[in-house]
Length: 89
Image 1 (tube, one colour):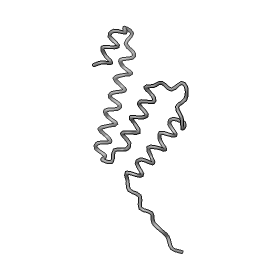
Image 2 (cartoon, rainbow, N blue to C red; image 1 turned 90 degrees about the vertical axis):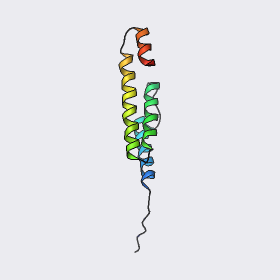
Image 3 (spheres, rainbow, N blue to C red; image 1 turned 180 degrees about the vertical axis):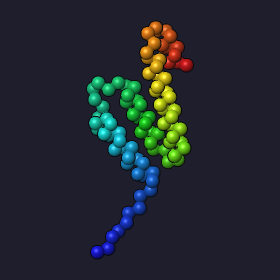
């Protein structure tokens, strides 16, 4: 019996992994109680996962965590004017 090897490029594997992760994390569709920020975060996460270069991918994930972490911190500010200033900065 002869075996056939299928060669798959690493970028294809990354895309497949990202699709599996996102479909699992989102349950194949966003739940009604998911916020727009959560969906935006997952979309950006999926985009970061598609970068072929490891350094670019890491930079994207770091930027994503910083950006959404800052947004979460700003949303904790009670004063609406200060909260808007925080989000705009």
